[in-house]
Amino acid sequence: MHTIRVSRARLSGMLVFCFLLCLAGGYASSLEPGENGFDTLPLFSYLVWVLCPLLSLGCFIAMLPAKVGSAWWLVLGALLLMPQIFVWVAVMDGVLAYLGILRHGFFGHF
Image (cartoon, rainbow, N blue to C red; front, side):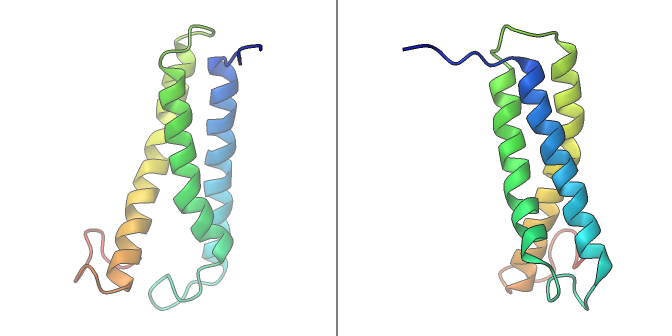
């Protein structure tokens, strides 16, 4: 069997792809804003905002022990990961507030 060779550049490519998907999800949800942000939220946007930051986090963690590639790829990965994690926390907070699990939510309703 052959081992899988993963470079930091390929993992950074996945981070860029997930970042662009998060931007596309934000654009799709901005086309029809509802009263609280979740009543007209497209399913694509919700799935992207939940799954892409998790995939990006996994790719960034996989970048740490990788020996192939420059350390600059780690910096790029961290810069692309930070806004996605913020979006993930805000979306999870909004969903929990929308469902009534949180009373007001940490970020409020978006």
